[in-house]
Image 1: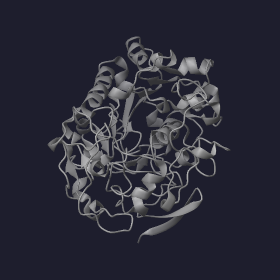
Image 2: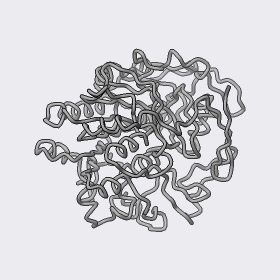
Image 3: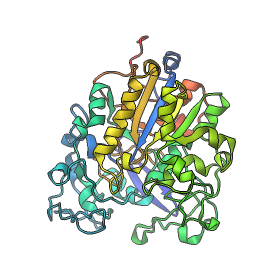
Image 4: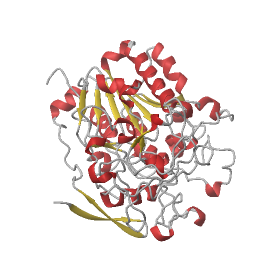
Length: 456
């Protein structure tokens, strides 16, 4: 039987249904599991961009993919009428993309018929209220209608044999992993490090959303003062045009996973591609300022010791690896060309970049005690057929790919266990004896089924 729940969002309520209950009592967190986790001395999280699970691994053998989509493939307009054909794809230049035929049927289609994985496509809208309207109470049937690039919502690459797909075949692919917060990169990066949305009380009126679907304004801040779409920090780096402090997100003071790790004396770093150039005032054109979540927090403000110690350039990871000084916890955020984000990056280059990082770690002495988690911040507006679980007003959103690479990982395994982005935080908390940051990470399942420890 389907369960129903009313979830308040801003000044309205949306009705959601889900056949899956939120995991309030995650299994596998017994004393033996926590003891086994102590064998992991290094955790490396590689955070890529903007693909749904079906968008990359819908054809992966053994996964819950496109063959199981059923009625979720059907798409309707805003009045609930079935759509018969897809609108023309829009390219990165904002014009109709002539590589795609007109009036494709409403069904998933293979991008490689029109665009190789080495080339870029247009981007798709991926914002807080839009995604909730696309999910449509769990029916997953309004992705086309509530997109600005509807044809691409149903497009996919079969990444099974691409560099990351090869790793997934060797180790573990999680096929029931959801990005924790509705919408885009900004909010999901905050959930990755804080398991909570930033607060912005008394934001300028022009930045406040109207979530009414009839008059939708999907802006930076909810009517009750939470930042959910892209906003920039009071701290650097930020775009040169973002210089009016009235329109900059106030420094946040809630704890982050970095704070929790530091309190326990656990070494950690956020390695960001292009960081050195950005803080020097000449950022790469594809440096994404809103992908740097720690700079929004008071404890990592400009000039702080914590900032200098923990926020570093991605090139430093290679240096630390060669010097045997990789911290216990590493977050790696590649620069734009390497992050797989549709619109400005191609898929193949990013996959090769990730595989190169993994390859370097596997050749290093730390490999024998390392866990690598490759995941995506959000779905980038792309459709997926699996209904997300209902937990709270923030999410989770759509399924995203997650690959586990480790000597402690099962081999050739597809994990059907329900996880979300903050499952990574829960794993770190159990491994290093940390207090949870919010109820979301406290109750998330900590990747319990991906491991095969010697004790089992």
